[in-house]
Amino acid sequence: MQNNKINERIQSARLGGGQDKIDKHHNSGKLTARERIEILLDPDSFEEMDAFIEHRCQNFGMENKVFPGDGVIIGHGTINGRLVFVYSQDFTVIGGSLGEMHSNKITKIQDLAMKLKAPIIGINDSGGARIQEGVDSLKGYGEIFQRNVDASGVIPQITLIMGPCAGGAVYSPALTDFIFMVNQTSYMYLTGPDVVKTATHEDVTHGELGGAEIHMKKSGVADYIAENDIECLQMVRRFFDFLPSSNIAELPKYKTNDPADRIEMSLETLVPEDNTKPYNMKQLIEKVVDEADYFEIKEDFAKNITVGFARFEGRPVGIVANQPTELAGCLDINASIKAARFIRFCDAFGIPIISFIDVPGFLPGTDQEHKGIIKHGAKLLYAYAEATVPKISLIVRKSYGGAYIVMSSKHLRGDINLAWPNTEIAVMGAKGAVKILKGISIDEYEEKFASPLVAASRGYLDDIIKPHRTRWRICKYLAMLENKKVEKPWKKHDNLPL
Ligand code: HXC
Image (cartoon, rainbow, N blue to C red):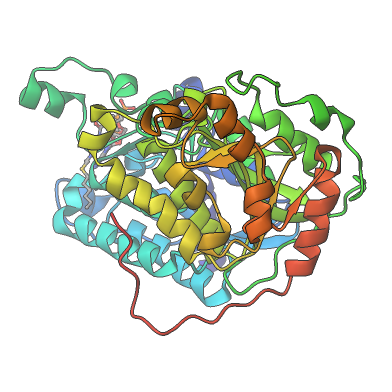
């Protein structure tokens, strides 16, 4: 008898909000919460918990209803054999809305992930705080946020936005390390179109307000956007392989057929002789890393800097590189914030940072100054200076002024600082300098500074290397730095310029 009851409850939990709601969900181009877990995790690896959970709400007709699993599925499984904890909100069950028991399930899995020091992936698809449960819903969010903060820098936290994510609910994803969104079917905002209309008389759609493209191109909230659920989940699997399980775990190591000493002659001609001409820095990255595999994040935000993960000899690294095709590779507010956050993630999780530098300076102008480039640029400087993971940099063409110091220079305790032969390191470019230092010519200035030799003669560069040997040199330095350890004096925490 009890067995029948239990089986019934399991069946009902598997069906979520019922076939009609599942059909409606599918018709809107989305997979169900369970289908998503199946694609995300290795086959048959998922073990569910708390499928029998029931809400305790007595308001607005809820008292006589049971909602299977209370709108969220939790459990653990593996991705390419490595343990991961997961929650997946089920929009077919009262819109995936979050009440007391729903949030208890999420915090249970957050606590387990922290106890086991394994990453957590949250799949969000929810109408937000369950209106019928009032302050219990708000309490639920607060409990989740606190755990997001506790876990920050301890275990990787990844959020997938695969439907609505509105109101204060957006702050859990915002507190996690990476946000993946799906084009057209997902959106995030603090106040929805109706409230916006009332407050500002602005007519705006869900997508215009907080769709995936907006968060990739304008706000910088999203780290990756996929065209559909399947692509998104597969990308997260690929992405996961770059991350260690926690801040005390070894970096994952994968087999590669790409020889460490591979010579790449095309790098000799990658940079145009005319130093005002752009070239694509991503080509350099793809030519030196293992198997040209570069996982770029925030690809369409602050395109003047590119950040992402790659591998050398099978081990993950974080790449930070100025991109001369956008704003000539200048650093601006958005680029500084984007790179600073990425560097801090890498540092927290022991991932070495490789910087490829071609930077004419910080972007000048009232717009940047008035918006606070001073404090935002300081974030990037701060992130490089506080990072104690192996830091290797390569100046590819030029590095001027404050940006020279900021971009992983020797003076911010860069471990290995390299340059290609035709690089310039100076306070500023020749044209600007001759205007200030009257009486000297551009030729004289370039003769003095259009070379890495001055910096190398002071020991600010460790070596001037041949472009075609870049990969081999980086591999050797990474191996040398593998056991780098730095002790820091005790402090409660830092005071990063925010
Ligand atoms: C209770 C909810 C709900 C909610 C949706 N549902 N959101 N139930 N609380 N917050 C229910 C609906 O009543 C409906 O139930 C089912 O879920 C599906 O919703 P639909 O509206 O039919 O779906 P759709 O047309 O796709 O619209 C989705 C939606 C809309 C845009 C998300 O449901 C919506 O606007 N929901 C409210 C969003 C919101 O304002 N949430 C609060 C945000 S503030 P039935 O039974 O009809 O199937 C917040 C504060 C958090 O979250 C603070 C943390 C600090």
